[in-house]
Length: 418
Image (cartoon, rainbow, N blue to C red):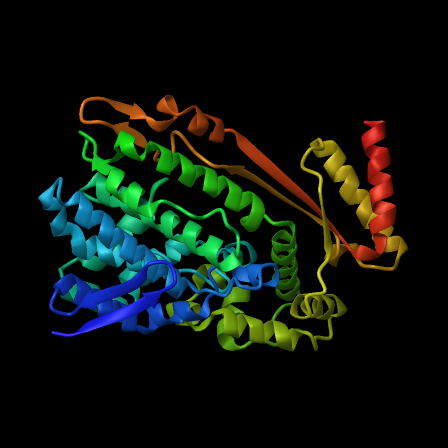
C-alpha cells in the first residue's frame, strides 16, 4: 500500500490511497500527460494581468473538484449505499472535467472558437493514454464518462448533478479558489454545511435539506459577486478582447504571411478538424511564445496588438451597460471616429464587450429543497434566490487612452441628447 498527498491551499491535505482501486485509478490519471498538461493552463486565463495572484492552474482546480466530489459521494452514500458502485465513473469525471480546456482556459473558447466540453469528451474517449487507464478499471468507462460530460447521460441523475448542475463540485471549488487567488473576499463558502445538507430527492436526483438553505443562498450570492467583480472585471474584458483581436488578425494573415508551428497552424486554420496531438500540444506556454514572436510580425496591426498584451499596455474600458443598444453603438462609432482622428487604427483599439449574466437559472438543472416530506424549487422557498434569477447585462466600451477626455465629453452629450 502507498499513499500520495497533495497539499492544497483551500482543502489542505488531499490524500490518495493506492489500496483503494478507484483512488489508484485517480493516481494513474493524474500522472498521465494529458492531465499534467493542465499544470500549464491558467485557471483564470489572462486575469493575472488584473489580479496578480491569479496564477493557479486547471490542474490545481481539478484536484479540488475531485476532492469535493469524493466528500459529497461519501456523504450521500450513507443515504444510498448503491452510489458506491459509481465511484469510478464519478471520480474520473470530476478529475477530468476540464481536460479539454485550451490555452488560458475559457478565453480559448472565445479566441479559438472551440468548446472545452466537446474536447474533454473527445480526449476521454479517444486519447489512448487516458482511455486505457479508464477502461482498465471497468469496460466501457471511457465512453460512459465521455457521455456524462458531453451529453449529461448517466443511469443515476445524482451522478450527473454532482458533475454538472447549479451546485456541482466544479462551481464550489472554482468560486473558493478564484476568490482566494484573486484576493477577493467573497468566496468564503460554508462548504461543510453545503455538503452535509446535500440529500437525495424521491426522483433520485440531488436536493438540499432546509438546514443548508442559507449556505446555498450565500453560495449563489457569492457567484453573482464574483462575476461582477472578477470574471467580468473591466480590465479582464479588455485582455480578452485583445486576445480575440490577436488571434483574429493572425488568422486573417494566413499561413503564407505568418509564422506558426505545425500545431498552432491547426489551431489557427484547421480548428474544426484539429488532431488530438495538436490539441494537446498547445497550452499557455506555447500560445504565449507565439504571441511573443508575433511582436516581430510584418503586420503592424498584429505586432502592435501583441506588444500591448505582452507589455500590459492595456486599452481603456467604460461601462455603458445602462445605455440603450442604439446609444451603445453610437458610442462605439464615436470612439472609432476619434481614434482615426488621432491616427490610431480603430480596428485594433475600439470595441464592445457585451455579456448577459444570470446568477440562477430555475429551469437549467435548478436546485430543490427536500425535507423528507415536501419537494420544492429553491426559488419558491427563497425570495433571495428568486431575485437572483434576474439577468444582468454588462457592456464595456473599449478605446485607446489617447481619446479618453474627448470620448467622455461626447458620451455625456449623448446622454443629455437621449
